[in-house]
Image (spheres, rainbow over the protein chains, first blue to last red):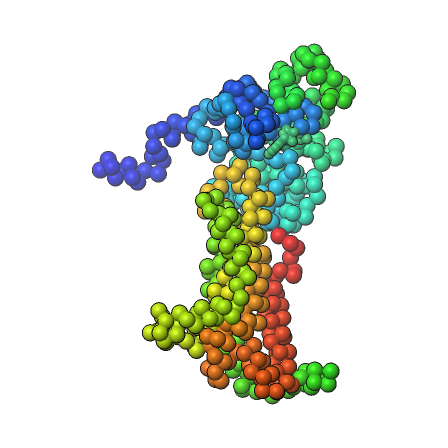
Length: 258
Length: 234
Ligand SMILES: Nc1ncnc2c1ncn2[C@@H]1O[C@H](COP(=O)(O)OP(=O)(O)OP(=O)(O)O)[C@@H](O)[C@H]1O
Ligand SMILES: [Mg+2]
């Protein structure tokens, strides 16, 4: 009889799995993490901890390794040395993250079906997935473009779509790689409001940006990359008031950092 | 020049007089070609997709062989199938030589590499585009392949149409294994070859016009049915 209830009980997940899904995903710990391609070190070694709350802004000049660092944390870039550890096993961790790419990836489907896609992948019924996707499209200002093909959207619209698609499953952590690069001022404010909402709802944000104003508005913590290394990692107020390195100071002041 | 116009006239006459021999030949052409395309697609499309998303030993070599097979001379394929199916060959007991089935087998061998190769290229490009997104979203292997096949369906349709175009116009192989027997295995291409050799140039030309019209019509029909020309490109 006990075996029978064990088989029939829908919530009766293996004990290990149940514990993992109840555990918070964060903190994320990087120790001596290195990304290396054909013998060339792109990023690292990096020691960094992403704590449970806040907004981490990753800054640095072009080619300093922002994208590579985000991909490394998300598991898209192969780790060549060191460790990257979530608070839960890796296979469980991926499920609870989302990523917005620097160049948005549009599936050859309608806007609605793009946003609904993550839900469909996770077994949500098509009708419900579409309804929730429509809500999100509305929130990011794509409510009038539901049936349009995602590949023909403008650059800014694509970024909004990518954001809605990333947030629809309420990830515990969201990686954003310059999500506002193609947005006008108003759209940027709207997106920032959505990000603050998501943060309030418990999504940890790690974002690369070039926009100093945006960094100041959103950051609770700044990671400044330079030549593939974490040059400085500090609480936001401290970083902007008194940067610890000449490169960071020059960067903040908008001077050219080579 | 004269004979071309006379050929056109002949074609129109053949079509509108509902010439039974002509319709029999058209039906046989379509039956053989559509069967071959269906079978070759069932093999070639999944094979192409599978090659695009899987890493395995000898993958490059497999793809190189596939691409080389696209260039197989149909006459040689015909000869090969002939040897297999002839009375003294390994499958001789089946008695398939000089039947429509033999022609379908030959065409399947000719167009499967073509369909698989075009499908492979299309799915490979789409996979390169989607890779990071699908990995990031933790899509399972099955989900990945299904998404790629669905979003790449137009390219896959193009692959099938390319196979159709090659098969409907093919003559060398099906002449050898089908024999162009009247009321049995005669198709448009072999009929054209036969009529030309008999000196019936106008009739041959008429058949040629019908063949081209048929190829165009099938393309248009499929595009219309699938809405390729209506919706934008995704
Ligand atoms: N797959 C790769 N193979 C070789 N080099 C790479 C690869 N990916 C990135 N790089 C190199 O690593 C360095 C860091 O690249 P990355 O994209 O992380 O910079 P970034 O800080 O995001 O720059 P940007 O501000 O322009 O987006 C660059 O010099 C880049 O050329
Ligand atoms: Mg970048």
